[in-house]
Image 1 (cartoon, rainbow, N blue to C red):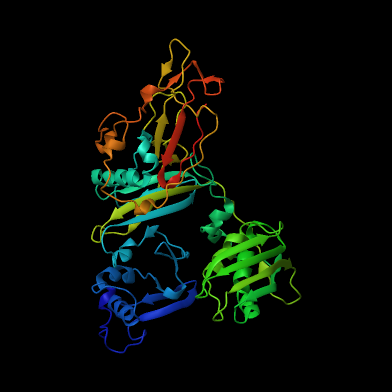
Image 2: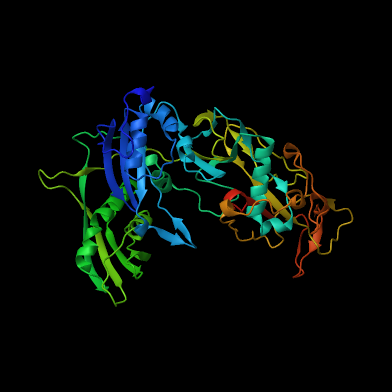
Amino acid sequence: MASAAKASPSPGAAATADELGVKIEAQFTVGEYEVVVLSAQDSSGLDTWLHLNKYKIPDGAEPILRPYVAAGMKFFVAKVDAKKVRFENGQAMLSPLRFHYDTDTFTLPVRLGLLNSAGTQDLIVHILARGKRYEVSNYPNVLIPTNYDVAEDVKSRFGEFYAALFDRTIEQNPGAIVTEYAWDAQSCDPCPGPALNPADIATLGADALLPTETTATDPSFVATVRVSDVVSAGIRNAEAQAQVWKNSFQQCYFNALKQQPSPRGKLHISLKIEDAGRIAEVKTEADKGLPATIIPCVEASLRRAYVPILPGQRPTLSFSVQLDVRAPEPGEPGWYRPPMPNLWGFTLTRLHARYGKNALGQDLVFKEASGLIGGREEAGQKQQDHGAKPSSINNFQGRYIIRHPWTGPITCAEPRRGVWGGPPSGTAPASLVAKDTAFAPRGKVSLASLLREPVPELKLAPSGASADGAGPQKGCGSCSAEGPSGVRIPAALAALLALTWAARTRRRHPR
């Protein structure tokens, strides 16, 4: 075992990384993080080094570290600078960290994340892969129940409803990892939109698929960034401060050049600065020649920054950034623009696990899985399909429906009930977003009371009749009805609201 390689000094003893068998492979600061990449010969030495360097790691962590050290893995550890953390509603909003590496086995080392766990926690994994969905190979897999009619109350209590549905799914399938979504990444039905575009997919990691080798005949370029028109108040050395961000702007510009050849233009930036020097708001205006992908990158880099302010003044800062490309001068190194891979045809899979500190004995190991469809409305069908069925494509989602029966006069002699469609106006309702579902209260809602039909896979039945009268038996079709304006419309058009995981609420209504 790696832990037996050498005896490590006690945490109170002075010891260097070399003496502990720890090697610092890289270290850098990004945003609010101070990052160190480590390798180790000995798990007890690594445990000691982390304690000596004030990392938040509990006693008794060495057995968890041991298999990772034995496998020759490297460790990505970060300290957070509390002065740079942004808070919203009392919660710390940490910036995302992105890194990539090559591996023969597609795994996620989740056991390390349990070291500081205070109890039950959620893990949500999104996987982007070309034309394939994924599931786990070393734990049970289960699909979230889908395509069930629910009560009107779910519209305002979706977080509580979904938490109860998910918890019941885990209760019936102990230790399972739940598939909540598997769909083409650049389409969705329903969803608030927009779906992911190629630039989003590149930002989420697909740019790591870019070729790394170039040839002498590949075109190269130099990206230039010039900061000007600096206007400020209450900022110490404002001109110099604006120049400090040039490297970040240049990296954002370079990433944009991968998406759109040779964009040129000017970016106008205004900053709202709080008393402590934190940038609270970034307003940007971009020339038409610049691609939209530059904007979120620039704004994100600035929102992580601080500026030196002068006491007793209200700080403001605005400036312009001129972005351009040119051919390199003789002998000047240039950037190569490697060809972008085809970023269409990716499938987005969402997996959800909920577990306690001692629940996981193994890291998650992922495997390719066959295609699924489910969670879609079939027009003119009285009973919608539940669950999923095999397919050559992936169109699966958790979807829950509130149906509103037609309440106006019906003029046909024999209306067909249970045939549902879109709203009488012909206009779909605005998409609603179910926010903060991770913080929804648990144990305060009766799941059965919110259902309008049985869910056999969860051994659940509705607890009573519908308070709002909704249900498949109330719709009607194949006749005419008269709307409020006197316009005659098909009575099959009844309002339909679909609620799906994480706020996906708009759907194409059946015709």
